[in-house]
Image (cartoon, rainbow, N blue to C red; front, side):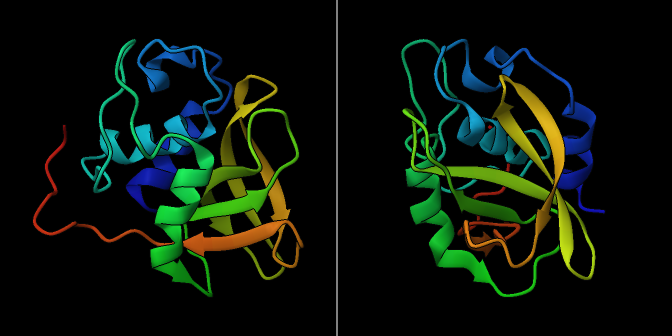
Length: 146
């Protein structure tokens, strides 16, 4: 299992979103995904560690979707990011991390589902899925943790 997927599973049940958002009270599914990659030493190019006055430009789900669209894969693996349509007052998409892949379903871990980190099943043919993305291990030599 990838380090990102393993850490995502460790976080299941957590409701302390401030550790992902730098203390900001904001919709946090994107912050959660960025935190996972930072925490395992694989920060994404363009990510900034958030705090009360600084926002990562990738933290909003739509921005992370645009970034992920550069790294689309057809067959997902643990550690990949899945972007799916969401209807809410905060965002039009939701981002999660794949932790297990089956023949017709995947297990994914999502932040900010009923204000907690949850693991759930996603059908591979779910029409809400916009893309799966696999981020490179290194971005132009930028691989150290922030």
